[in-house]
Amino acid sequence: MRFRPARPDAPPPPQRSTRGRMAIAALAGAGCVFAFAPFGWWPLQILALAVLFYQVLRSAGVKSAALVGWAFGFGWTAAGTHWLYVSLHNFGGMAAPLAAAAVALLAFGMGSYVALAMGAAAWLRQRWALPLPAANLLLLPAMWALFEWLRGWLFTGFPWLSAGYAHNHGPLAGYAAIIGVYGLGWLAAVCAGALLLLAHRTRWRAAGLLAGLMLAGLGLGQLHWTHAEGKPISVRLLQGNIPQDEKFNGAHVMATLKQYQEAIMAAPADLIATPETAVVLLPQQLPPDYLPALAQFTQKTGSSLVLGIPLADSPTVYHNSVIGIAPRAGAAAYRYDKHHLVPFGEFIPLGFRWFVDLMSIPLGDQTRGAAVQPALAVKDQRVLPNICYEDLFGEEIAEQLNAPAGGQLPATLLLNVSNLAWFGDTIAIPQHLQISQMRTLETGRPMLRSTNTGATAVIDGHGVVRAQLAPYTRGTLAATVQGMAGSTPYILWGNKLFLVLTALALGGAWLLARRNAASRATIPT
View (cartoon, rainbow, N blue to C red):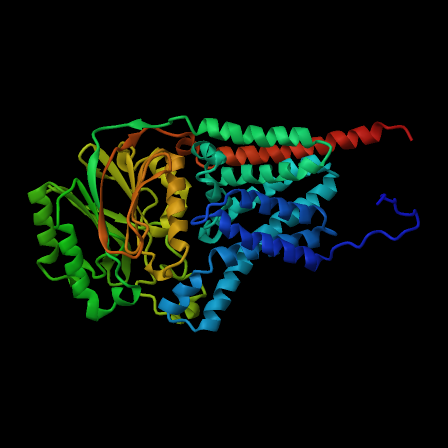
């Protein structure tokens, strides 16, 4: 069959409606869940961003582009964090329709960031009259990444499923030590823009850029920014597998206390760590011999113990904390208080008391600890704890390593203690493990994870899981871990370099627009 060109008077082909573009974008966003753990199909994430950019570039205007962006963000969040329903309904006691509505409301809010990013990109492209390559490689990726970064800190931030996490084992992972997880998200968006240009007249340049970014990432992954310090230490990481509906139930508390006491005292190690709030009672509520018995064990065996326990400074001020019990009698007490609290789960945002009252969440209104706190000395190593959700905020961990509390030397090991039993047997567990892997790539430090239901693991300074307990089992993970010293560029600069690069991309797009405008102005009429 021969191709026949359309007649000059033929009507233009029908344009896809904004609703149709929104539906495609929402499906692409939802499909991104397969780019993250436990699936790990990272190319899907780049492909999904390419679909988003394609739909935005062909939208009817700024409003249409914003709606397409919102649909993408809604699908991304709803599919990727659907496990929040389990927390709110199964364990929080919220009615099923309200729990589903709460997850949808979160997805609606997170979609707003993408809506603003894509709407702003469409507006700037119109205003600057940018050609397609500049829009794909400079404008759209920069706006995507900047609004992801904004999502990570505005209103305390919700950076779960930031785009860069999908690439912790892909070719882009080597950039993490330089520009962090948001920088990886920006590079993934640049790759998506280049992917679209493979059908453009600049296809060979786009293909070269795509290959160059991937190859450079692989090369950077071979660099060692940190080095071993001191002798390795032995660790024992406990996984109690206490069901969430039993954890704070008075009928089961004493059995849980006994279980953890026996697990701690089963064998010595240089460092023994329990999950977050392994002990659910305040110290003054415990049997009088409980903590002294643990201290006696640590002194007898030369073990250091990190114990997850709530602490109260007054009847109205309490913290989600860990304490360190040293192997030396008379040693200074160690305490770490969680700094970055979970909205609605650990602190109540202004005006939302009514919402929290719909759930049965214990310890739901806490006080945050200091932003920078000291590490715990364990033989030759210095262990810096973070508690559950804090592990999402790489810039805060980098700050503690770059400027340690009290003039101490930077920590050589990171320790995350968590309780994800709130989310049941869902993809939240492997997603959180992937987040910890990104922190090791950014800092060059191993991460130890002691969790209630998983994933209890040892991750080396290159983001590789070296040992792991099966989720939803009771057990102890024993390993030997080497601490690392030195600074990655991300430790030194945090997100500053990423922000400079995206600003340069926007500046380059603006300069190109100015040059094109000047060229058009000089063409004789």
